[in-house]
Length: 311
Ligand code: MLT
Ligand code: MN
Ligand code: ZN
Image (tube, rainbow, N blue to C red; front, side):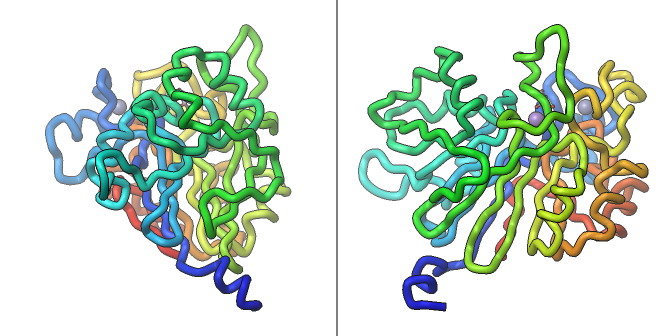
């Protein structure tokens, strides 16, 4: 490695799970599914989780948020590294990247409106969605620079940390669904993130409708994958009586079953595999449950708020 390269890749990649839950969080404000009931009654087998977001850094001083949950203020309050540390106004958050335009991933942008500079990164299509929602104009353009990131392009997420976006099977955001919804299409609507740091390969994919051969070969050999853990079973929200949609209809592959993510990863060489974006109906959230043990026995970790992943 040249001197320039070793300087460029100095520091280790640090990822922090700020929120491990899917849209709604757990417990969800209006839900009494089995997991939410346990949470509302402070059962020790379950832990509250906020909505879906992680933070990344290579020096511990400058951070990128990947996705910006409605609870971002609460997440910053729980994460000293993300708090202002000098002067009258300061933030270590240099950039915010969003992987789709779902409310759980963009809602928190409204909380970052107090005129501190940061870069707002997303595909051109997701940037258009934000641009067409005038409420996001509260992000003062004098301070917040919106940068469209093309699929496949290597870009600087933070000084010393590059990344690439790639399309994964997904769908448009719930509030943009028209009469007919394409599910499982690969477009700028739903992307995964590849962190490029020296020879380490880490991926963050909080929403994914299916494992394709191309995605499997991309992930094979990775050091770390944070993957869509929305549902355990495709019909679990219907079974629980709290929804009418399957996971497939929502653009999420389930953990279990022949088409599930646990099976899809079984033959992949991925050193560390972690489920994120976990819906409150998912029984893996209950410590000691059959689903939790099955996921753990298959080599998966269940993310929690505050989880630190260094690679
Ligand atoms: C999802 O991941 O399916 C969405 O976050 C659903 C939602 O907007 O609540
Ligand atoms: Mn979501
Ligand atoms: Zn629930």
